[in-house]
Amino acid sequence: MISSIRGFNDILSEETILWQHIEECARNVFKTYGFSEIRIPILERTELFSRSIGNTTDIVEKEMYTFLDRNNESLTLRPEGTASVVRAYIEHKLYNSPTAKFYYLGPMFRYERPQKGRYRQFYQIGAEVFGIDEPRVDAETLDMLLFLFNELKLDNVKLEINSLGCKECRPLYKQKLKIFLSNKKEELCENCQRRIDANPLRVIDCKSQKCIEITKDAPSILDSICGNCKTHFDDVKKYLALFDRKYSINPRMVRGLDYYTRTTFEITSNKLGAQNAVAAGGRYDGLVKELGGHDTSGFGFAIGMERLALLLKEAGGIIEPEPTIFLIGIGEKAEIEAIRILKELRESGFIAEMGYQNKGIKNQMKIADKLGARIALILGDDELANNEITLKDMKTGEQDRVKIEGLATGLKTLNIKKQA
RNA sequence: GUGGGCGUAGCUCAACGGUUAGAGCAUCGGACUGUGGCUCCGAGGGCUGGGGGUUCAAAUCCCCUCGCUCACCCCA
Image 1 (cartoon, rainbow, N blue to C red):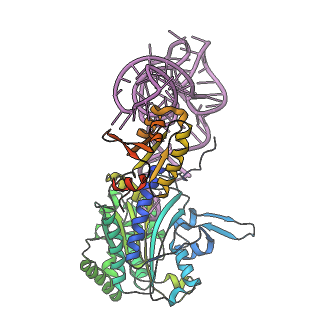
Image 2: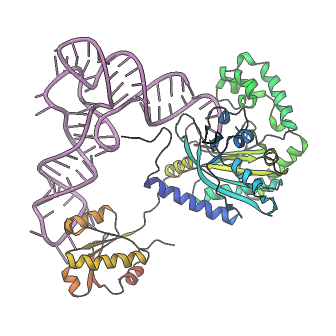
């Protein structure tokens, strides 16, 4: 047996029904906020990711699916979506549009050890806004994301925000923190001793009780950012209040991608295991320029599809299957007429299935039952002789003969079609 | 890359080192040739993840390997 490769999963119908529901909700919500869909390639030049995400990040250093194609060019399966959207924005000179707001959805690839809510091929729904560095954009985009969660009937998630400052003030904070940490180096956990140089911000995010204790009175980034960044952050909070969104401030929240500036955020749940973020993102004001465009600001987020689906299942959000009509034809003549009816029903928008007559009526009824059919239609010689068909309600067990002519119209009044 | 837990039928799980590896659910067939759900009867389905070793004898003990899973790391 040939199996799928590690961390690459088949999404089966039970799951795809939920995924389609999520996607449909997302498309509708994003549309009302003025976002349009962009479809970006799955493969990009490796350089795009190393330059945007950051050469020293784990993603670029050890998690990318990178290979040489037949032209000896280094290509990479996208580990995230933002870089590609930014590239497309620059490449197609989309900065001429007054509203540069895009959303995308699709698979991403990272070579990591799979665990709960983390796979090597995983799906994200993301959105990006370009060209406006107003703090209202941050709040408005967060409002959109939270509205999507509202629409999906998902509560029990929480929004945490932070500011990482800009390219002027963050290095100063990093330095300050490094000095603080160096003095306590011996007391930190093994991981964090290594992190002091590699990624000092990570230390204040460490889960080890020891490190939490030690970093209690470490300098906070929010006390260290510059005046402009501080004003921006205060305004984001002000606008979030105007959009009536609740949040908490977490000055210890760190993001793994180098391009983030100022506002960053996470939406987390305690139902997700160790990978507790269902969505995350932030502002990236230097990225467009870094990738060769004008000095254009950006703000965006990505939602983890598998994690979101997990939460919806946890919350018991079961999607009702659409009602089905099951046709049973008895005998050759009846089968011919049943096929005609089957086609007519489908073309009228009903979900219709038909049994196989050599199975016998009893077994066909069983199949109808197992499929969860709402209505069974039975056509035999008796019915055929009178141009009628037996209509059985599978819930109540009641049945009646009705005229074949006008059947589809009649069924519509029974209200068994999907509610629009 | 590191560590823990687990691999027996499609699924959930039994089986002290000792008959032909079982049960429930699911599937298929029958009781019931024009009527589903309930009940009863029957059937199919297993290289016990793979390889090696110990033993008269291994699903069971040992070693290796692969896979799944959770966690670290990291992240959506």
